[in-house]
Length: 599
Image (cartoon, rainbow, N blue to C red; front, side, top):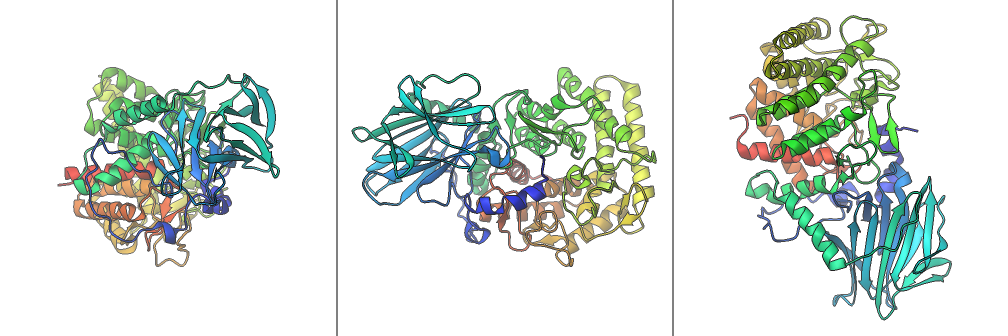
């Protein structure tokens, strides 16, 4: 059963305490010293703020609250179903603290100052992982109560197996001895050494894995180096954070699969390990800073899963596609941004044009029940469909809301279609899209602008709703196309009521409904920040845009990680970590600030 991000965050609150520190612990309030990271120096990955994986793998590893224990997470299975094994590293015969460190090629385990117990854990292909070490015993336990470890006979002797939902996890002991101690399965080293392969399979039992640790890890390091070579330019002061953000996007790449027609960047590699079709647009923009083909591959993934009506799914994972709602149509806006940076070839224009037409027409055909020309957020839950889940502007998720942000996105989407049609030489179609965009913007102003503010309207009753939410300010994304007095009034109020030392709160801090950890009722989110910065810049308020960008960049630097959202008044990171759109937006802002956007 699908759960919204808001419900999901509440359900995972306890679980996440096991995998990252509290905001008070995680937030490093000291200003980091600027440092240029040499390309030949391995990136150090802070496992307090990151899940460890690599491009092209479904496997994720991260420390739990238990001393010396890694969680083995299978990211192809959504949410808590991905928890499979706990791997306990026990220094043989000694009680010593175990430390985990990581770089892109592998995760290191060490106990003792002299390194007399050490191991390397690395990922091989989409489904395999390898543990190679000395001086440790490895204890294995199911990570969920509904899973059970049992032995099976393999080509090299007994193996451990866990089975769930058609998948089998096989623990192959390549070097070591499998024993039971106090009811727990352990792999003991032989002559001080152990080597274990953990393999996921469906249907066919995998053969013993042929491993060459030094060569395998070197190949991963080369893949990371190839990716790093495309990192966007940023200032020297931001290079360390930019490299961490660029690694995050590399790390979050899932393999090509049934649903993903190319490798796909998941929003997270644990617990929110899916693609949502507005999250991916910010990732595409970040990739598009240096690689148009990679950006378009990422951009087109939801469109490959569009239904017969032209609706994009709400959430995608190979075994989990939810279609009960969808996500905001920011895709035209994103294409306009990519077209600012790159000259599209005719095949590239044709690749995006027809799917974007169908996606645009879906809103007018399927989300305008009263036929007044204003599509509404609806589906099974209008909060999920808006992307703002529990925002105060959306009172009842079962109602359908004619929202001003939705209309603004559609205006920009139709203008993007007009631009593409022009470049394809389809003059009549281009004129039609320009006309429809202008008419829709006039309809937005006529019906949802109430003299001093934008309102949301319940589709069935036409009752208007007001709140202290940031949501009604999103038409600022229209930038220079918004009437100048309206633009200036909204920009001034935005700065006065929503701007905190760290960026834009999603609920005005003075609101009685503001909540510091309230999901869309207060915390700072990356996507809304970037959409508004872009609109402010294009609309003639570059100083305010730069100010918000610098506050956001500084908040990420102090938090030392790319989290789902942040406390608007303290800057403390909240909810899930290693989040794709946060890393993507930070990269975009660091690059654009360095490049002097808005001057």
